[in-house]
Image 1 (cartoon, rainbow, N blue to C red):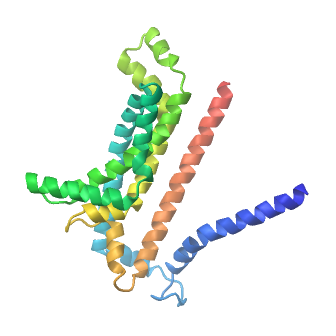
Image 2 (image 1 turned 135 degrees about the vertical axis):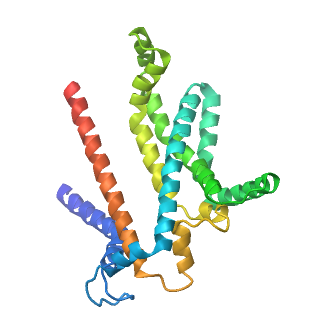
Image 3 (image 1 turned 30 degrees about the horizontal axis):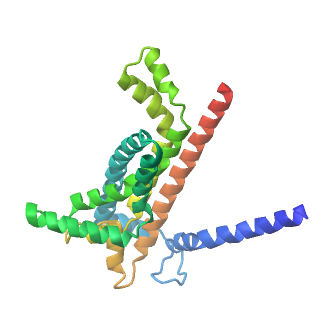
Length: 268
């Protein structure tokens, strides 16, 4: 009975993995297709070379990466500080504030996108500025902060609160105890929150669409503008490179986590 259950579970997981990754495999496969359609015309690397020659796509890619990097940095700092601040509340106040901070996560993107667009439009009229890079960055920080809070809070609840006082007793000042003890203990959650912020910012379309104005162009908007005509195979090549970069990052993170687990096991 156990063997049958094990075989069925393996087959089920195989189908799930196939369902999830088959489209990506097809995309990567056709990024090497010499033709512009889904009919295989032969192996080629020309779409990769043409990708790096396309100034519009490269400019949109750089805008996307810069926004994602800055948004993840600012969101990680703000989210970590917010999580520490929330942890200082007790009882119902803490529960209410924590639930309120989670609302942007479950709220539809179009609600946040439209509300931020109206806010930036009103501020633009009063302060005489146009939506663009800065408004997109602020919008991305806004929806990334709750994800950092969500990742840091469990680390705070599991952390032994007395280690901060112990660090003070051993000679650290308040800042040293905070950075060398508290932040060190929270670092796995901070890193996870930062990476999630980066990926969500990298992937966002709806909020960017409503807050970008008429001049700013990121990768998702650039690809969307191509849907009015046939999408170039260069996008297949770009998607394949982005997927490869994410896989490499995930492998490095897993290796780091395993190394930390081994180090902690040796200490215990």
